[in-house]
Image 1 (cartoon, rainbow, N blue to C red):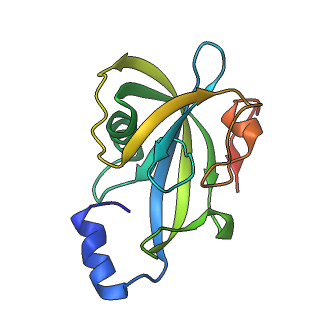
Image 2: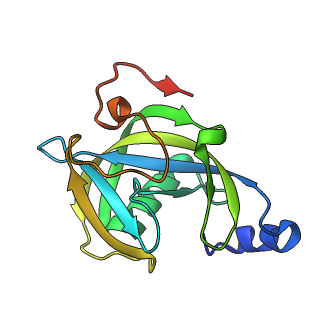
Length: 154
């Protein structure tokens, strides 16, 4: 999971027990309306995403996470939904359990640094709705491909 000292300190007290994590995830679509996904070692594909660090705003968190995981500088333009509950619980390979509450944001690309900072990142790739692999978390495809007309709250 995250290398944050904040999380390490909490984990030292609770072990692998479930930890509730406020987080953000980005929907980045290219000109063909394909969705950008992120691949990590030994995990399913996911949206560029991560936890909101202490004293960090959701806007700053999504900008940071997308840059770290993809090398892209983005601008959040809309909130597509808020997700949580048991479907958004996840167990990492080290047995750490998390319960995510995710703010899903539509983002536009400002520029590309060309440099992925996150050492866990293997690759990024755009997928059409028809060719999209299974994701680590069950976001509705209609929301991911921006087919909804209002904010989705789960």
